[in-house]
Amino acid sequence: MNGAQLIEHERRHNASKYSAKHDDAHKRGDLAIEAACLAAQGTDAAVINAFNLGETSRWYDWGLGKKHGHDRVKMLAMAGGLLAAEIDRLLREKRRAAAAPPQGQIVK
Image (cartoon, rainbow, N blue to C red; front, side, top):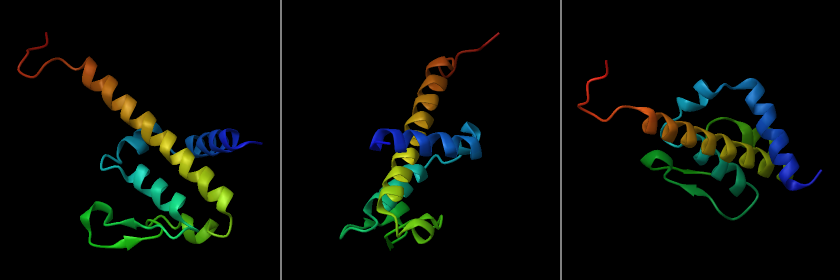
């Protein structure tokens, strides 16, 4: 399996566990932040000040880094899967906004 296939596999695995509705509840960018934390794991980088909480995190509070931190490829595949989920969430948000009537307009 190549990298893109691993990411797609991770995305599908997570899609079977988490619904679009679940992902849509993460409006503050949680999915992207967790992806960044996972991608930084095993490097000298860190995700700084996630959500302006004044903290530095090598992984976010979902426990994925602690559970899979020994496997860099798995961490990157999970990060890619979370980024795909965040992109899907943003696209759904855009579609809903485009389909919504303009503010102030009365819908009959």
